[in-house]
Image 1 (cartoon, rainbow, N blue to C red):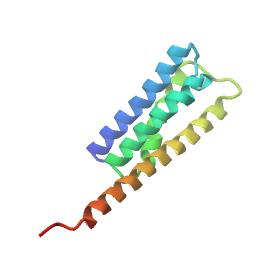
Image 2 (image 1 turned 90 degrees about the horizontal axis):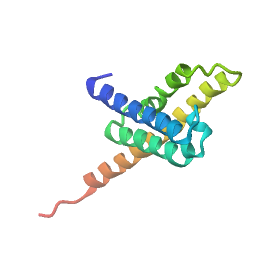
Image 3 (image 1 turned 90 degrees about the vertical axis):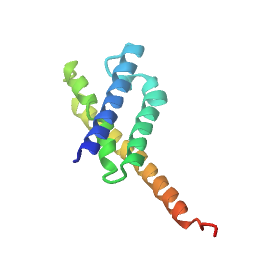
Image 4 (image 1 turned 60 degrees about the vertical axis):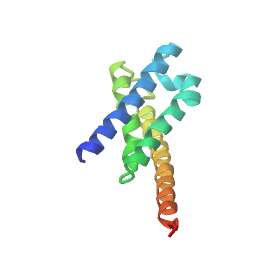
Length: 125
C-alpha cells in the first residue's frame, strides 16, 4: 500500500469511526446500529465515503469497504461488548464492509464510464 492509499484508507476509516461514535452519542446507544439513525444516515454516509475512495483510487476497491468499518469494532471492544452476540457483531461488520465495497465498485464503474466517454469524444478540427 503506497502513501496515497494509506491516506485514503485513514480518512475513510475516520469517517466510519465518526459515524459510529456520532450516532451512538446522538442516539444514546452504546452500539450505533441499535439506532435507526445508523441505517438512515450512517450507512449512506459510509457508502458515500467508500464510494468517493473508490472513485479516487479504483484499484483494490474492496479495501475501501474494509476501511470504512475498520475502526468500528475497536469501539465495540473498548465498550466491553462481549455478550452472546459478540461474534454476530463481527460478522455484521464483515457484511457492512461488503456493502461498502459495493459502493466503491459502483463509483469505480462510474469513473471508468466517464473516462471512456472522455476518450470517445471527437476533437473538432
